[in-house]
Image (spheres, rainbow, N blue to C red):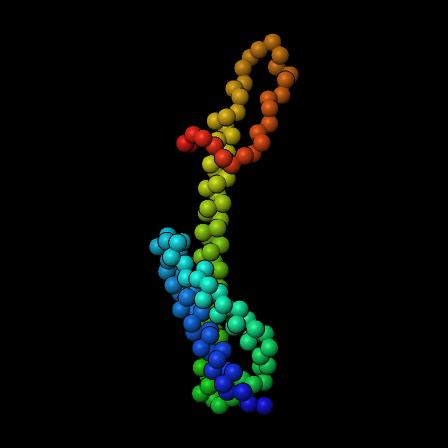
Length: 140
């Protein structure tokens, strides 16, 4: 039950994906979301291929591999997990920050468009509710 070429292929795919993820992490740290490498179709194909290969991979193959190949495989797998976790944290931070800014803008626009409460003869009428629309014509 030896399949060294398959292990080599998994190592190669993982190394290429790691490089792309590290590039994304650097771009996110610099605030350049347009420079993300994982949105490149070639990298997306690599991740699909890696997913298929890894899904059908039997761990016993790695146990029966030569020691040098097994060590490389374990090292790449460990690094891949670490980089993937860091990438997920960075993407989550950017997502939360951008969603927070959108919520703040919506709240400010709704506050600015809310009718003023005045003292009048009919205090019981309720003001119209905001539709929550996200498109506005003036700058906040």
